[in-house]
Structures are given as C-alpha cells and as structure tokens.
Image 1 (cartoon, rainbow, N blue to C red):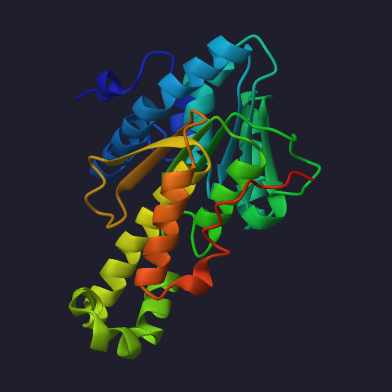
Image 2: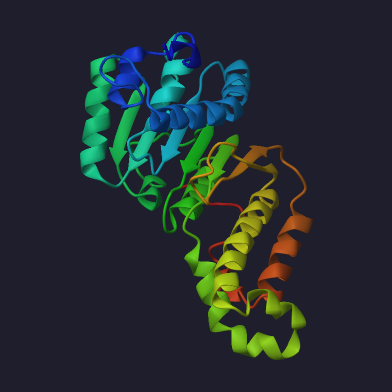
Length: 280
C-alpha cells in the first residue's frame, strides 16, 4: 500500500528519507507516520503566522531553538520557505556540534540556501552577531533545562512578532516550591496542592507555564494555550503561542508578582521578568 497520500503536495521525498520519516524505498512505518503527523499538526499552527509576517513584511526570519536534528526547521523550509523568492531565512540553534554539522550538510545537499545552523546555547544566541538584531518568529520545541525560558528571553530581546513553544524540563519551580513548603504549609491550606512530592513536580510544571504566559502578556503579547494532538507518547504536549499585539501590560505584570509572592517563588523574579528587555 502506498503511503504517499499522507505526504503533503510539494514535500521533498528526499528530505523525508534523510530525516528517516521515509525508508530508502519510500515506505513509512508506524513510528515515522506518527512523527510526520506530529510535524504536520504543528505546521498547521505555524503556517498562518508565517503567512501573516510574509504579507506584512515581504520576508520571514525564523529562529528555532534547541533544534536537535532540525525536523521542524527542515519541514517548515520545505513546505513554506523554499517557494519564497526573497531573503527569508531559518536559523537553527543547537548546542550539540555533531547535529549542527549534520544539518548543515543536509541543507547543502538539498539546496536549502536560506537555512543556517549555529552551534550556540540559546542564552548565547541572544548576543551572537551571527543572528539579526530582530526576528519575526521564534520556535522552541522541548528545549531542555532553562532553554525554554532563554528562548522567551531571546524572543523578547529580538522583538519577535510570534513565539511558538512546546515547553520542557521545568524542575526549577518545583525545587523552589519544595524548599519553602514547610514555611508555607502552616498558613495556607492551598499548599496541600503541592504537599506530596509527585504533586510538587506536576504543580511546579503547571505553574511554570502559567508564569510564562503571564510574563509574555506582561510584554504585550496575546497568548493562547492549546494541546498538541497526536503527541500522546510525550507528557509534554502543551503548545503556547504568543503574538505581539502591544496589549496593556500592567495587570498581567501585577498578577505575575502576586503568584510569585503567594507561592513563595520570589527568588524566580529574575527568570520571569516583566520589564522591557534592553537590546544591545
């Protein structure tokens, strides 16, 4: 049975083989079918944002943080960017040098001239001269440790119009909740929500994303949170999309402060900053 009906028109078969979504003879297995479905599902959310930027500015600059093997970047380029007759560009940021080199070689082989791959941490990319002073779209899928928050910091510093996040690795808030648990338990029955260690971790993860949303709103973004369907194998299937609308900032900034105070998370104020980012 042919699997080609599941592949979008214009999609490079060679790319899908290189990404191991298709086998060498052009077939799909169950795992690769699921992987392709996931990427296409995410593409449905991102494509309208790209079209909006292209319509308004005539070109699109996208930075993908914690790019890994750059599945997302390559699919976005193949389905959207390669047809553009302009200087639109995708930058993949990744700390593992071998993955950067593999992606560079693949882009060269496919003739994807508008793709660059940089061996940088997300934090270092904020000040790197290898990236433009402003970018249109920032994506970060399962960027680990502090990389999701660094990606937010990057997007704010670069005045990104659109930010697309699938958050990951949120242990820091849980560890701060744990540290102050004894002190807070006495005075507030709601601390029962995170009294047990498993609940501390889950609640910490939830609170982290709530704080991220408030932080983005405090910088003038309109934020929507949805679920990525078809990512059942992954616990982290939350999708945060932020679009800059220059919205009023005071109330979300106040709310953020209140949440930090109520939950004993004041020491994370620097991480969830609400003041405008100084651009170097």
